[in-house]
Length: 417
Image (cartoon, rainbow, N blue to C red; front, side, top):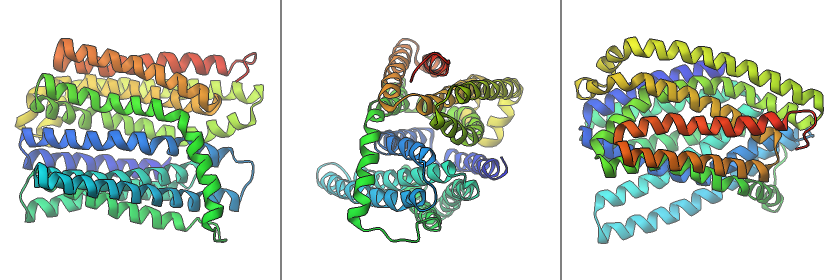
């Protein structure tokens, strides 16, 4: 796990530094608005890019051919990303121009930077997923580490030279994202087919990727809605200051654990897709045994992380975000636990995509995420900040139950997927 683990370690450390810079330089309210802005952008990213990313990774691995056929996917995805980029930039320019005249310049800038961040981060994610699927992990790790490092350096420069405002932070994040996108796309050109493809040749496989991704749009939209829904509800019910604290806890507890589990998932998912592509009973049993072992490892890591966060939460808060957020330190173990549960749910989701056909797994994802979303919104409305934490944990437990049940029965010898 050397390359991916190294990339994720660099990413986690840089993210802690980015969080410290943002919380030190922005007021609690400004950081709350920044968290809301990034959530809206990621909402759109998950709907537009995640379905394509999921399908592309699966198709690259399960392709029966090798060599140029697989490498041609880089040209096809670059073609697809180019079309999405042009469309999103046009929409962003139209909306930002309208808001300049009818609302405010700051909102207009945030819309334009949001569109730039959307297409560059989304396209970058598709490329990194492909590199991982083809086990080109050295280059995927370089992309992951570069993303957080560029963002860190630009934020330091911007807050040193410019005003420390929410709008400045959004511009920096957008600029850093497009720079990293250009670097990752340059890396992927190394693995293009030596034979150039015409537009007429690229369009059929690109169209096929779009068609295959359609069943995943609804569940990805619900996942995205769950990601932004709790934040919007919190901003509405208890204010952006509490939202800022919630986002800090996500950054310090939930996301680092998710990244650790993500390292494991990065190595596991191509193996699961490869075994599932063969489709025989022996390989189904191998997937089930393999999956059980991985979940036990994640459970052990999670127990250690939760215990450590219980004793070290105040120290972590003191040296990362300071006195403004220290009263929320006691909540950190719950977010570590939520990250672990979410990681297992994500692993089972990846397995379901590999062993169940796209239409069926899309339906499973839709209803499990919908149930989790309703649970989270209800708990936030009833209990505010505490309800958001409980919802974060239990909505992921719902997905573990649903995905785990379907995966188990799909991998039994007498079940035909």
